[in-house]
Length: 260
Length: 271
Image (cartoon, each protein chain N blue to C red):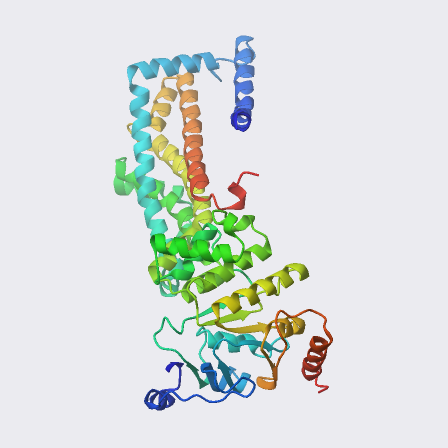
């Protein structure tokens, strides 16, 4: 047991070796004068900026604001996408009515709507929520729909034969069967959530991580710019790890998630 | 007598009629009927799959239905299990309440829920019948009977094909059905596992005394298991042959070989 635990930790650490080596190389190159300070601040300067902003409370506040925006937008867009995915997966009528429209809207890059969204919402919270919700909607919708359509019809027939009610059929057969695809959608959506928010905050905001980065650019604080970028990377990774944890917990039955 | 699939006109007659018991040809006339099919016809578009099937099966009989691919034998089974309704004709199942004439069907694929542990999969057989601890005890009991007492907490993905079919059999039998319809349940198994499963099926059938209808394309399997073999050809019953062999039966005895030959001759139109 102890040995497998050590193995797991070792395997998790392995993924961090490359980033650590890159940072080390970067620091060395900066100190040696190979990288100009006006192009890339060295990691030590970024770390110093981190400590400074952490102490002033600015960093925590901005991360908090951005996270709140990201999650609220995700909750709105994700739940609407999930609801449409369920409805269109379960009902032919609903699919016939809405799927064509949704597929057309899906082909518009949602970031292309930024000028329009600014006209509608100004640079208020509404603009960011709208963009994140729109961006998150489609991966969740498409994958929920695919997941439900991909449920083995033989299992559904089996459930019917054994007298499951529609409710039981949904919760015991259809939803668990669609879950692997729904998780794929979830992970895509989390990526799009951060991407959309960064762009929206960079263009139109008066708080948040993207705003912090843009302010720093105006004052040529390149260490803060790099710090914000790194924080985005970490937040993205965190969201993905969370999705994978959920996946592991709920898909224990799946051969891909069973210990070899 | 209760009627499952009837034409509206025939429904009235059957409801009003007393429980009549016809003597089926190969079985002793004293055995009450489990079900009877009258003039069952099934068309898909202009294609007639079943063309006026009449069949009386006494309670507790093991019937094997044989035919070439596409002869309509699976359709017949689906009608019997209530999954399809006939274009015309009637199916009458004996017995009293719905619970007493429950029928179950087992398919070539085990159709287990991959996300439910083995015992939970078996409990599906008790949907609407029992739940909680009762369901759990019953499912553990039947799993023991099919020899899977050690695997109750496994995921289906770790079981072999034969073990999965045993779980499917346990699920079908946990509620003690009156009729068990089997649609080539052993067709996908290797030869040795298949013989093992045949013996298991025979043993449980003898214990539980349900009426079994086995659709198969394996003549040897039919002769090894059934009391009676019905050959279907072009949607009609081409041969209805009693198998009066004592159990347990042995593969490859001269008498089995003779019966198998007789069935094969009929199947290939040499009879």
